[in-house]
Image 1: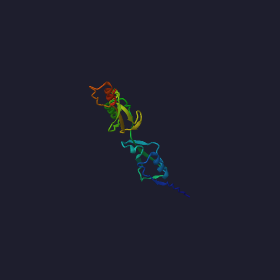
Image 2: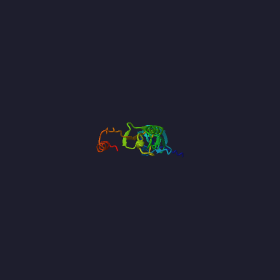
Image 3: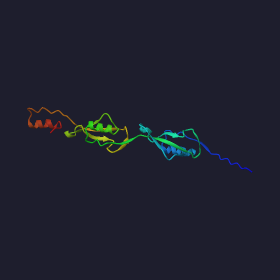
Image 4: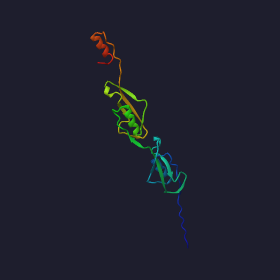
Length: 173
């Protein structure tokens, strides 16, 4: 007697993984009986909203596969950069450093008053702080020191006390 054994593999349909995170893609694959390939490729993106999301899959969505087949995915990745330390730089130097790091300067730059002339037009604060890892193309906010210019009162012909009061009333010494 001849005995014929027929192996029948359970067939499943690959789900559409586009836009999912790696964890979501793995769960979706496991849910239909497929396996995420351990090697995950990456493709450069510029939109931070895409970062870590599935860009493509192989086999494609809708493919009929034997249960437990491997599915490869490619994830979008936005390059990351570290914010430079801009503190104390002139606005021109800070702008160049921001551009060199692959970042963008926010407009307008805010100003912080100071009475120290040596600080005038230098960076007083930045956001994000120096050394923070951010997406390439992110915006950096700057605050620069500005010496407030005040008109000097005309004190010619005043008494010493009146002149002193006129000068100090303008924040001068």
